[in-house]
Length: 149
Image (cartoon, rainbow, N blue to C red; front, side):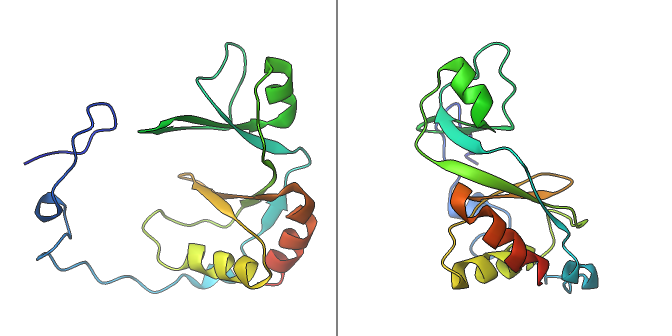
């Protein structure tokens, strides 16, 4: 069996992946009722996406390692102090609702709401909360839409 590894470049074959071809996927559970109160919270500071390893003393919000390189998500002030280049300035909205990584439907709920309003959304899921990144100028509007859910 071939395993997937970002460091070695090996790729798993579809038949080797749990719930791949031939394996029935487990039935999704019902959506928790608490999702009607997702408690979105808008951060006061702007965030940016930059490339490269985190410089010493710069605390990134997230580090994403892809085959193509490293993406940093960090406060714009920290990126500016470190001299990191960026193009996209985002508002960060944290959903304070309790959810599990295996829950089905939460991402669809908020992404459909934002997409219907023409707002692009990038999501980072943590063990405790989901974090949404929308264009800085769309933060307040996105927050208002999410509060209506």
